[in-house]
Image (cartoon, rainbow, N blue to C red; front, side):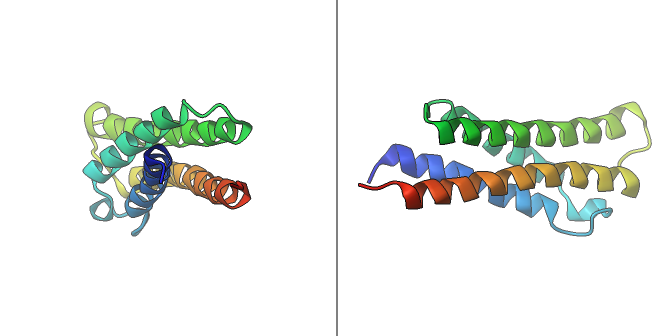
Length: 127
């Protein structure tokens, strides 16, 4: 068993599951979406991106692209959250939370794409 491939797959799937955990719940209810879960999703997604930097195959480039898309979406959601909390002074309203969750949904789609590509690559690779 190759530890590098195990850790690679672990972080890709972990990025998907933690993002899904943040995404689920009522879209406009701030009590269903915790800031630390978004933070964890960002950290795990960034770790997955760094791990993908070493893959020099064509599928590796596509996996890196999907990971970068997820990072941009999650960082965008965090920026919106921070802007709502600290700049506007209104806090996170249901409308703003719906925007944050919608943006994180884009990251979720990118993570799903990464996992599907990982499964396809695993099935196609022959020994």
